[in-house]
Every structure is written in structure tokens, then in C-alpha cells.
Amino acid sequence: MRILSKYIVKEHISPFIMALFVLLFVLLANFLLKSIDKFLGKGLDMFLLGEFMFLNLAWILALAVPMAVLVATLMAFGRLSSDNEIMAMRSSGTGFLQLLLPAIGFGTGITLLMIIFNNFALPEMNHKARLLSSDLSRKRPDLEFEVGYFIDTLPENNILLGGRKDDLFTDIIIFNKATDISQRTVTAKEGTIEMLEDGVLLNLSNGVIHELSSRDGEYRQIFFDHYQVIIPVDNLSLNRRDSSIRGDREMNYTMMQDKISSFHEKVDNVRARVNNRLSKEALINIPTFATLEEINLHLDRFSLSVIDSLNAVAPKKVDTFKRRIKNLKRGIQSDFSLINSYLRSINKYTVELHKKFSIPMASLVFILIGAPLGIMARKGGFSVSMAFSLGFFIIYWAFLIAGEEFADRGSLSPALSMWLPNLILGALGIFLCYRTSREQKFINFEILNIFKKNGNSA
Image (cartoon, rainbow, N blue to C red; front, side, top):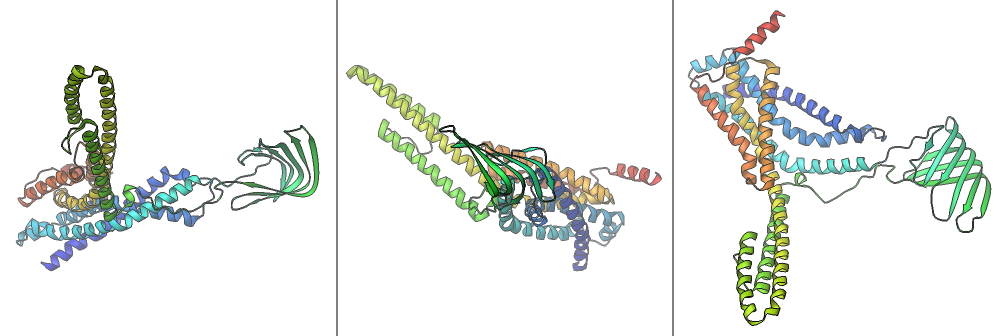
């Protein structure tokens, strides 16, 4: 039995590696096409581009691994079925569950590795990828100095270059756009331009500085043989930042638990403030977890009783009391808006917390689906396995996105929203495994053979 288990696991390894590389290439290429505008014209070196791709490879890997497991399971059991090895194993008394256990063991190993990866490596790489992406977005492109065109990308200056011989520019005119003390125009017969770390240095020769004072209207000319103009430019070079601020997808399990606990503490503090306001302003006690509607109902009843009493004793104080109750309601409504904001944040972090475990667990779910489908479809090849994998993963991801949306709105608990796709597809996988163990066909895959014959005849 140990030999059989090793044999089945071995059948999964090659298709898994092949599918993983294909999926990583496709998903990474798609990502780079969407974000290529971050690189164009910014003079970035290849090592920086490689770092950007490597950091973003983390979340792509987290998505690609479950799909690769499904492809590997479909191909492994499809080949065993097409070569009648499944039939031979069953004839020798090996049940379907015994054939499935090695695959589940393979999926369990992948799941544990991905849980560790999602909890430790993925948050760090997501954090560094976000910082690098932000730095790339803020970096200004290297300035290009073209002859015969006004260059207006430099702050407070326009430059016109008449000609160029290698690195030497001729007939240079610099218009200063600053509106402080004077208007200034610099002309030079020739000069060179150097790119500094935080600006541009112009080395000018044989020129004139024309100045018109904005105070007294005095016009001056200053002739020079050599003159240097330094123009500061922000973000001309890429400045790498470090930040301790992290988003929900940049935290590990411990960080998220601490964040959720801090939000729960804030909710408790705001609720305590609401109770203090009610007991101080309205002299009433309301249950701690009362809703805004329940509190307003209590306040309406309280105000009616007080107004009746005031009308009989001190009618002039009625308007003052109404204003006090109105202000109290506004304050409580503001507190409940803050509570709802904290609760949404709790849901958001809880969703990401469960996602760290639910997505890796999809590998086991896909094995339950892939094994019976592979046996029923027999040898469909890599393309058919990829098609099945993509179809089921789209269904899985649609459930996951919908669940996340419901959880953010508070319509569904975060735990259920993240585990519901696994539960639904897992139930389908168990059903398919049961039908396969009873040797009952549930889906007819003969149409694949038709396409295969047509392909061969062509």
C-alpha cells in the first residue's frame, strides 16, 4: 500500500509543477500588462523591475497553487483511468477511498505550506510591494531635453534649446516663471545639462541675464562668461521609503488579532460613552447593547413624560428641554456611526483573517472534485484539465468575492462568507467521490472523445 501511495503522489508532482509555472506566467503577464504604465519612461533599472515582479509574485502564487492542485489531480487520475490502472487497482481489492487518501495527503502538505506562506511571507511581500508601487508612482520621469521645443516640465522655468552637438547645447534661452521679486530671462550661446540626484544643473557659457524688477521696474543686463543654474526637481530619483503602516492584506495572524481586539475595545469605549450620556443628560439607563432605534424609542417616551410635567409646572423650560434631547440624539447618532465604522473594520480584518486559511484549504476541496472528475473524464490532456480547473476556480472565486461583499455590508458573518465556497464545492466533491466509489457515472464526458477524434482526423 505504501508503494501505491508513493506512486499516486508521484503522478501529481509533475503536472502540479507544470501547471503552477503556466499559471504563474499567465497571471504575472496579465498583472504586468495592467501596471506597465508605472515603468514607462521612468528610467528604471532591470533589478528594480525584477524586485517589483518578485514581490507581486506572492499573491499570484497564493491564487495559482489551488488551481495547480486541481489540474494535477485531474491529470493524475485521468491518466490512471485512461491506462486502466484504476480498474486494475479496484480489481485487486483497492477501494476508491484508498486511492484518494494519497492525493489528500499531497493536498494536505500543500495546504500546510500555503497557510505558513500566507501568514508569514505573503503579508511582508504585499507590504513591500505596496511601498515600492507607491514610490514608483511618485517618481518623475527622467527629463528629456529636445531641440526646438519648449521644455516646461521643470518647476518655475521654461527652456528652449536651439541646437545640439553631442552633449553640448547651443542657443539656450531660459524663461523664469517665478513671481517673487523680478522677471528673469537667461540666454547663452552654449552649455551642458547635468542630471543631479534632486535636480538639474545647467552649465552655461557666453550669455546674458535679463532682469526686470517688479518693485521699481528697473531693467538690468548681466553679461557672463560662465554661469551655473541649479533647478530643484522633486522625485527625480526614486526614493525608497519605509513605513510601519500596514493594510489588512499586509498583516499576519497576530497583527490582525491585535487590530481586531483594538477595534472591539474602541466599540466598547463608545458604547460606554453613550451610556454615560444617557445617564447624565436624560437620567435613564438603557441596556449596553441596545440599538439606535431602541435608544431613540426610550428617549421619545422619556421626553414625552418630562414635557407633560414641564407643561404643568414650568412651560418656559419645554423648549430648552427639547433642544437638550435633540442634541443628545445627534450625539448618540454620531457615536453609533462611529461604532458602525469600527464594526465594518472588524469585519474587513476578520475576512482577511479567515481568507489566510480558507484559500489554502481549497487545495483539499479541489482534490475531492478533481479525483472523480479525472476518472470519469479519463485522459483529457493538459488543456482539458486547465479548462476544468479554470471553470471551477472562477466559480470558487465568484463565491469568495460575493461572500466578502456580504461580509463587508454586515449581511453575512465573515467566517461563513470565507468558508462558504469551500463548503459548497466540498459538498459537491464528496458527492462526486461517493458516486465514483459506487462506480456510478454522474457526468458523461464522451463529448471529449468526439473532439479528440475530430482533432486527430484533421
